[in-house]
Amino acid sequence: MNNKEFNELDKIGEDKLWDRYIEQKEMLIRDYFVVKYAPLVKYVAGKVSMGMPQNIEFDDLVSYGVFGLIDAISKFDPGRGIKFKTYAMTRIRGAIFDELRSIDWIPRSIRQKAKQIEQAITELENRLGRTVEDDEIAKDLGISKDEFQTLLNKLSGTSMLSLNDIWYLGDENDELSILETLEAPPNMNPDVLIEKEEIRDFIIDAIKKLPDKEKKVIVLYYYEDLTLKEIGEVLEVTESRVSQLHTKAIMRLRGRLGRIKSNIIG
Image 1 (tube, helix red, strand yellow):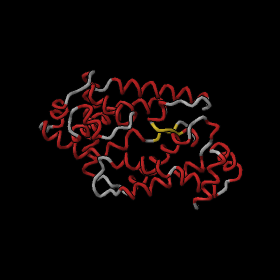
Image 2 (spheres, rainbow, N blue to C red):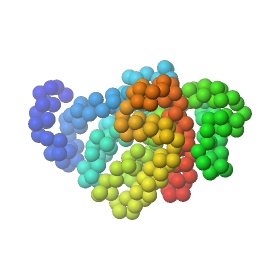
Image 3 (cartoon, helix red, strand yellow):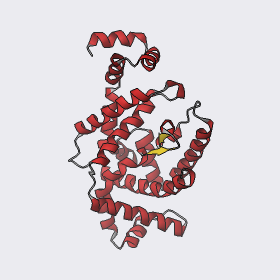
Image 4 (tube, rainbow, N blue to C red):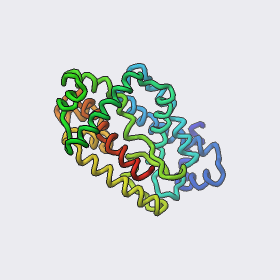
């Protein structure tokens, strides 16, 4: 698409272009939306890349994300009451994460350790009825507290996927990310909306019960869009410490939300 074509379409207005695209599926309009929202792909890829191993290239994440953007454009329905940017971010993230999973970039040993820690946290908190501390988790795992901190650093990249995972509430049109449950479109199917409201309440409650610093990391990273470095400045801790706090928060939430997901969805 050249600049002249882009500028001409830009004058029409996005709402009218969506109507035209949905009715006629013009490739020129699709290309317009791809160009217009290309910066969104780079933004999402940048967020995902934080904490990833060095062998994960930013440009590769962008390439994966473009497929998600194209998918979002082809499936977007303005009538559902969701802003395209919100919908596209979910699709872009999903495409990136799907590709990362398909190439199995997380070593099996690291994956097993992550599952072991998540299980230990879940079982301890269920048994004790409260949030558990690092030394309690380390003791349960049979390692020192320092070894536990080192392990959290190794696991930091793996946890970036978690809150962007897709939950399926029915058919393809009723899919959403955990984060998306915090915004309930008014035009959604009433039965699905009630289900979504229940999930949202559980998620909010689970986040509220996190230790204070872990809760702040989740809020600042996912809802305020701060980088790990910026969060470190707010909390007056190192970026490495923020990464550790994020990883622990995700593991607590995954354990709690996993049970919720089983009870509500499956």
